[in-house]
Length: 145
Image (cartoon, rainbow, N blue to C red; front, top):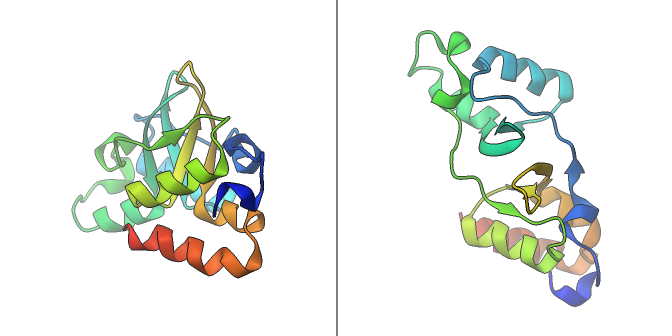
């Protein structure tokens, strides 16, 4: 997706604002209940409003056999640290570039004060890319994984 695809759109325009979050101290079972209730597969992990990680349903699945007490474990034990983020005013070209560069499926939208404002999945970009370029965008993101 090039800048001219949809000029002027920013991360704030395509993000899911105020996503459900959990703390590093939430239990894995509490997070799984949010996944179920919100029909989502990823949740930012925040401490005082600042993202410290992200928990995905895949993270949970990969740790099922590793811990006998997974449902009681804190999210911090299995979350992905080192989240990739963009500013709310980042243009869509930058959003796409970061997804591909870091090989991630989601970006957190974080303001200048470090506070979480939203989340963007690569799927959120699809309505903003011309039909003839969707396959290329998905391929570019997937190639970086």
